[in-house]
Image 1 (cartoon, protein in one colour):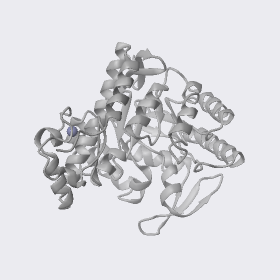
Image 2 (tube, protein in one colour):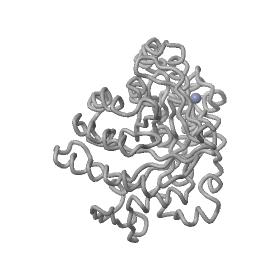
Image 3 (spheres, helix red, strand yellow):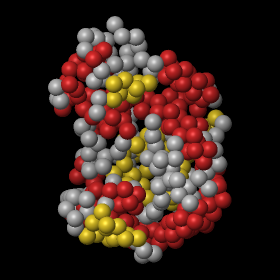
Image 4 (cartoon, protein in one colour):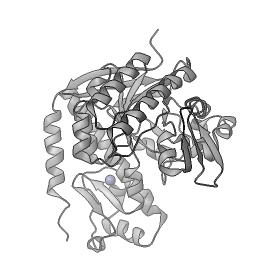
Length: 376
Ligand SMILES: [Zn+2]
């Protein structure tokens, strides 16, 4: 019998890989970009619209959902898929990263972390065991180990101490997760920008054994150049035959560079968050729709894009609804941005399969460098 959750790599071009992650809730084509549905919604989007952009999987945030409406309530209501009307795979983070970035009055011990809710100040505890319980109550298909990571730059001692704590928590996460056919548990490699710590972390994780591996602790302020130098070696330390996930990345050129270095999955709030602030990502780079140059422009945002915002609306209209604070502004720009990110992923998957990824990358960078179309 085929395993209920497995990764099938179909082609490799350089270090870049393409394939499919099979899950009981449907296939995830890789490289995959996961839109972020923080509070059980990808902001400004209906789930069917998210699917129409080409997304195979969404990310949900444990920290937000445990505080409101709570994992227990979502469980009573039939689980997160039913609650938010998304029947395809969902990956949930462990809550660790967001506790560190959002919660007040944190206290970190060997056991876990206690903190105050940023919503109402109530006190909570997250441990590896509690994080596994919450992600099980949510019904997550891909569960992440509970971990901890310092913001960069940080000194080597702090990075080592944090990485080793996360590795002890990874073992506890594995024990607490148990045996759940059809559900996957991913380990998270830490170690900052220190190669020897990345090596130590990868060895500790592969010894425990996980269904997939994330490269954690990047995109936390180190910059693209430092991130890419780390990705030049970090993914190679993880098992070839399992999916590799780069957490919280990124901009279109970050994503392309990560895939070129052997990453299979990514997530980021950027396309949806930017959509709500009037920023559109296009093949020609970033377009600020609030700019006055668009107010009389009847042309689409990107004539090569097949999303509804580009097919059915002008730059002048998108500019007008943004300036008027109309809700459709965030809806259309989010749709476009998510569609564009999925277009990039599809382009990479096809070119890796065809063995033409280098040419695809050259074209991607060239088109971006040309910049936006000339104003009328
Ligand atoms: Zn578009």
